[in-house]
Length: 126
Image (cartoon, rainbow, N blue to C red; front, side, top):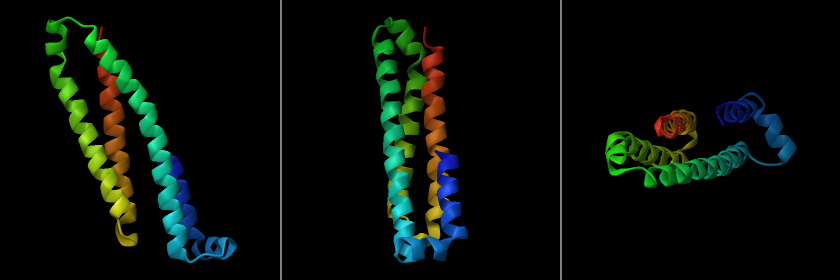
């Protein structure tokens, strides 16, 4: 997601007027279109992660109570990372043009943390 987003953003910054002219839109409208494309891409990737979380939940449900307790902290960490990602995504949706790049970077970082937390827990479970 990061490389794709960086490519879109670079295209906008470097060719702002050309893209606007080609699309027949104002630069702010192009930025909004890029923001929407980013959010659509994020939704698709979240759906993919949701499938992995479903596998995680299924595997945890099959574990003995002692194993569930052993991984309780990691599961809480995944929940916290998800809450952080959700908060960052909401900030991205509300970000002004001036703060868009900062909001995108924060969202990317939260996303990577969430993916890592889920993958780590999946690989740790027996």
